[in-house]
Structure formats: C-alpha cells, structure tokens
Length: 186
Image (cartoon, rainbow, N blue to C red):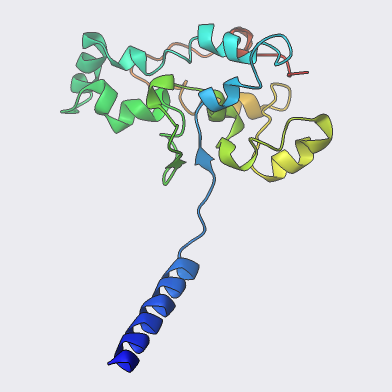
C-alpha cells in the first residue's frame, strides 16, 4: 500500500514538474500607469504622470462609456456597448491592440491609454530604468523609447489615429505630439 502511494505521489510530482517546465515562458505584462506614478510624478519625476493624467489619453476609456460611443459601435455592426467592444477597446485601452497580451493584477483598463502604450509592457523594465546607466538594460528588457525624429513615435500613434477609426480626424504629428510629449525624469 505504501509503495503504491509512493509511486502515485512520485508520478504526480513528476507530472507537475513536467507541466511547469513545458509551459511557454510568460511574456512581459502590462502593469498599468499607476505602477509608473510612484517614480514619474512631481518635479523629480518630470511631472510625467501629471501630464498624462491631464492629457487626452487618460480619458480614452471613459469616452467609450457614452451613448454616442455606443451608437458608433452599433453603426459599425457591433451588438455590444463600445466599452465592451474589442474593436473600440483596441485603441482606447493600452495593450488591447496586441494579440495575446498579458495583464498584471494591478492593470486597470479604466486608465485608458497609458505609459505602456508607447513604452511597452512594463513588467520587464519597471525596476531597470531608474538611472541613465541602466537604460540599455531596460531597453533590452522591453522598454520602448519612441522618437519623433526617426518616425518611431508616429508609427506607434497611427496604429490608432488612422482612417479605420470612426471618429478619425487628419493626424498632424507635431500638433498631437505637443499634447503628449513629456520630459525625461531626472
């Protein structure tokens, strides 16, 4: 009897170890803009969080919670409210555009379009970009640093700000960038 129990326990342990090691590695997770707030607020943090909070992207999800947005979703052929429609969420919530995206336990879609929309899922670099000499390691861990001059910022912006949007207005990068650009934290 003891031998059967030992074999069963050993087999279960072996299967658990195999299942764990054969699982695909977990990719970086979106952790939410409030995770960035601690270091990126106030003068020392370049007032980055405050700039985002007052800017157009912080309210992106909230704009979906209106009768007007629900009508747009319905006119596009969706049976769900705009705030529940993948087509709408893909541009109004960070990471929803990315297939197979992973979201941490503190991620809140109500934050709308936050830091990680431009800088990539933060779980891999959150603690690695706090000093200039650590930026290369943070980039290796997934930090994106889009720039206007090389076109990488506009390439990200036009994933949503394009003619597929039912509320599209011509996209002027210089005007739009002025609303979202922020200084580097010190």
